[in-house]
Length: 347
Image (cartoon, rainbow, N blue to C red):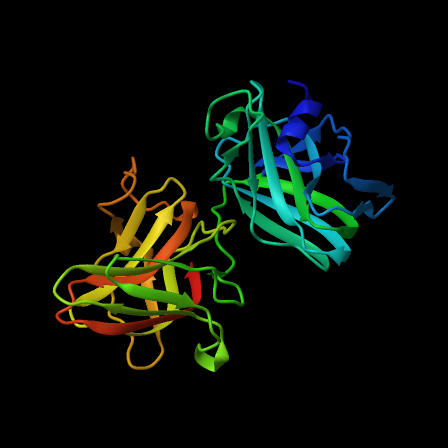
């Protein structure tokens, strides 16, 4: 398969490859060998002496502005990539860092990082070298790369939607320094999130997202009614994607709830492979006022439903959804209310 065909299948279009410095391991520098230009469609690129690249992207589709080359050294033992860049963006959404790895056998893996880089910046980002996705054009079936076999690295920025500005990649250094998150990762941003609700067929439940949280913040609001004397469940669920959760140790959110006697908290996290993990023992609901719920991620145990996880443990970087609800056998028929806001994972 030719490089041009690979680009088409990959759906991202890489533009302009310049020379840069790569460090194969901490303290052992190597240069980016054989720099070359990779043609692009969907972006207009112009080299500006001293300023890097001027880019103009008109379409809504994703495009990748990337710097690429072959490694002189090995990535064996490397845990992170420190990328230094200068970005002056005059319009559009902030781009997201991207790494693409190739080995000599034609294997290809990539990762699009959640953290955006926008505005006028002379920035430095540290990127984890874990949790790769195999590219559809990869010549091997391996789901993850063997880093000491990598021969070529692409370092780039993914743009979604129209964008203009200038970009200069200053350097990329690989090291054995561990990845440490810069701070919490909010799951819902400034909103309440996109929720749906599963419940027992004999339960009545609705989910809305009114601005009824502390200070008028948007929140998830689940109102339900259950019969007594039989096991019931009401489980609002929210999927999410493109979150960099590596290094996170705690789930935290604000909640208020009124639950019928006999029912208790059910908090689950799901991985992209369909496996579910639930918090055991469950924390008590804050009531009658809004309160913080902070749950260490090591309290989540394999659930007895859904797919079976081969390693039997919650892989935090692979979390793609959560459930915050209630289950149990109500002692009598009754109504309940659950409200959630400010959901985030913390280091």
